[in-house]
Length: 183
Image: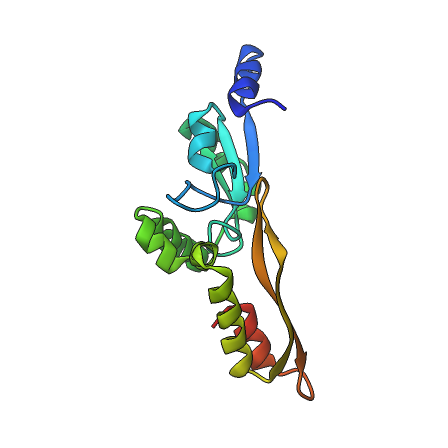
């Protein structure tokens, strides 16, 4: 497998830009989290990618959006393309992205603002307790809380707690939303 630096050198030797889609949207790697092998925007650009495309949700923790970062001349060219008028995002999406991206300036703020980062720090016991607490406040009965499931990132396999539950009666929308958003 080639590194980004090797691919960038090859592309540049042929007069081509390197466009790298990291998918997950990790801007940079916070300290002391198991993300060492996960690609991030900062490292990809430093290693020679001219443009990096990624998701606004997933590891970035913001609204669903496609983001392009990179050399200003290339980003400016893309911004002038006629299709960009149809693909531009609205003010609310930009405001949400602004808030989330600001969280990346400080590791502590990032852990407090973006749920995936605080979840990655939790122990199996903490995750199990959290699952049981969530189920207690909802219309669900826990059938199984196990630690055998995994959160899959591109390069890491992390053991995490899985909660399987059964509704008491019919599905309650409020409870479903509460479980989905960990509140």
